[in-house]
Amino acid sequence: MKAAQFYKIYFSIQDYLMILFGTLLYGFGFNAFILSNEIVTGGVSGICALIFFATGGAIPVSVSYFVINVVLLLAALKILGFKFLIKTIFGVFSLSASLSFFEWLLKGNPILHDQPFMAIMIGALLCGAGLGLVFSANGSTGGTDIIGAIVNKYKNISIGRALLFCDFFIISSSFFLFHNVDKIVFGFVEMIISNYVLDMVLNGNRQSVQFFIFSQKYDEIAERIIHDLDRGCTILDGVGGYSRKPVKVVVLLAKKSESVSIFRLVKQIDHQAFISQSIVRGVYGEGFDQIKT
Image (tube, rainbow, N blue to C red; front, top):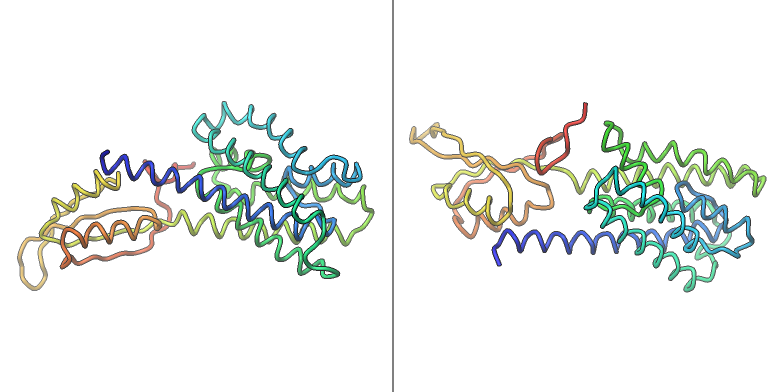
């Protein structure tokens, strides 16, 4: 097996594990801190919570969540593509199983009693971080996440902001069930914190870095970067300011998560190489974000 194929398989498995871990975080945070305190959040999970409370718990959130997403997945097939849909299907099944598991484990009992605000804060952090991990792996948990991903694909609007508009209407609808303004306020607090954390995790994982690699073995380094990491690079001509000797500089743009692999690769080839790494913002093109106008 070629090194490039190995890296593709490795990162594919890593994506699915990240989606799984993200849905577990969300399922735990939602059941332990939000649903158990009778707070309605945004998204399809919020709609399912409304159904759950309206039916007196007869229809579990995990069941209604799965059914609604089957319909949304069919819509996502044409717009977002089959590759995105595979991870979305995995995300939907994973989150449905996670919600069902924690429903059974916690049996609707809150972990924090008589502390609704603290519970909402913790639940929002867990749910936002979970969704952030899922989106970082280019996946989705379905529901309004699909709507957010569609908007983000065509417009320069963050996923968190796109979900904000969908969530506003869902949370406000809970007033007709509970007739309690406090619960609506808690719902909005959860929505703001969750979406903020989502964007923080998502932007952190998608952050790009720029490398300047100075080495006599530049040709071998560039070859390994292209074939092992499946990344393109550029070789620039330079002149040493002190020595006045010609030098070659390998310029490389990559995801921050790939930094360790790049350092290891360069060290294996030339442990005396001089490397400069810097954070860059807004990298668009093949292998990175699409240019949005």
